[in-house]
Length: 393
Image (cartoon, rainbow, N blue to C red; front, side):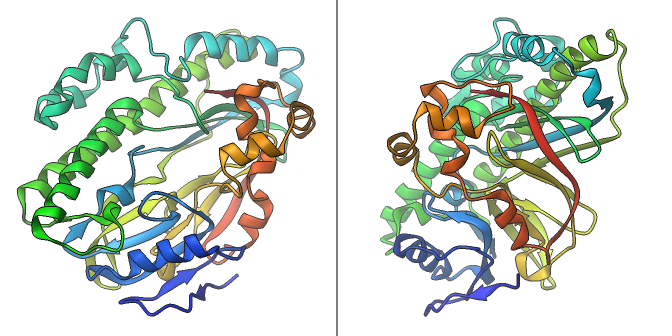
């Protein structure tokens, strides 16, 4: 589906690939962002777009000489990792329950963290730069080390999936944990304080920003890149542990070489060139999809997921959606659905089926097939996955 420009009077246009009508609050949020004087060319809305904080989740915002920390969000570097294994479905018989139990034992979920810090964590080069991070997070280095290799909660997950050829894939979704959250909050506070001091009249305080060339901008950009690297490494550590569990059950512990491995952010910012100018691109719930990029578009607990290859769609700033996107809030999902609904919608999946994950029920999300269909101009599907085991935070 081609994009549709929103009917707005703003400094730059808003181009929408959304497969659903935007509500008044969503339209207002898009309008607020597009009114900022430093936004480059236009704002791009992905098919899974929905309300966020400051900016819509599922929006791509290119900016010149400024960046909005709340637009990047508090789960800096949140993203996906997937590995294609040489195993097949017929090797899984009767093993999923045990694999899930061992993964849950090995990888902490929710607010939990590792009791011990392994070499796969301490060997990470990023720890050398920890003392250069924001002063108010210096007491968190020990916690950050223990949380590396942990999943978190909410919509984060670890899944074992099958593709169209019944080949086994490993997939997980997580970010920069508490340290990324704390870094984001400290810098968002600073941006809001600066906006007040400068007397800026912003359409939303969460659009407070840093200007390139200032010490505050430099400090945020440094911490942002560090947190994004932490998130990438966090996914690598978890995937390596997940991989060992699966190898134990499917090949007697013999390691396998991944046939394809993808590790991509979908909450982050980078310097990139678009429309012949170097800009800061913030993808708030969006995946980079240049023609050289592989990406992951996950569905919910009982739905399909897609491994995709980008087509480099310039109008979308070479981006695609990051998932199915919520069509109802967590509170509304809990009011709308029952445990029986959860059991029915996750049939055939070895996973939790209790009230603690009711807000993650597939029915709370837009249909993933609809989300995929609206962006054929931006991606091609490499593999279609269906989970058979899911670990939730």
